[in-house]
Length: 170
Image (cartoon, rainbow, N blue to C red; front, side, top):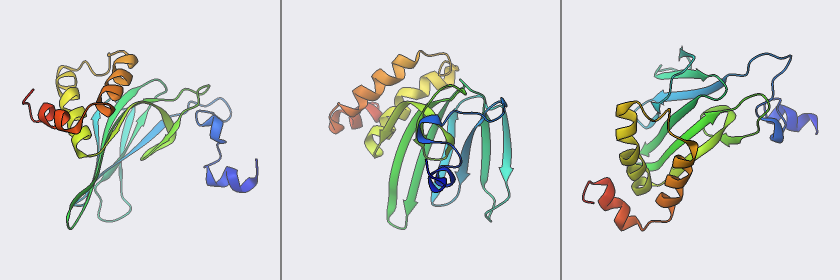
């Protein structure tokens, strides 16, 4: 691997996103923001630590750190002057040192993606499906296969049916 590739990838080769250096514990960073045009928020998960970001100004961001194996949910939302431009809901598991994972927006070095849906209708349906589990505190104890199965169903269901589901009409 070239030095340019190592520098571009933050020091980790593509297949080694969960690697550690010197035997130290690898924590997964999740960058959260709350601004007028961008909201990256944590849906569920128990971070090891959370720190406030002072830069860039104005403040409105935090960094949550997760231990290997911890599960968390993210809602990514962006807008411009004409309305919402990007919706995405993710459920991820933080990587252990021996695991490889995928690159995920706002997550460093990466994570194992259990659920990933994009688009307003599918994201709203995913939030609607997740809500009872998050409120009851069961989202962390659910089997990973449930998230994978739900992603398949959300991506392969007609948008009109998902819209009715998300609005509570089904």
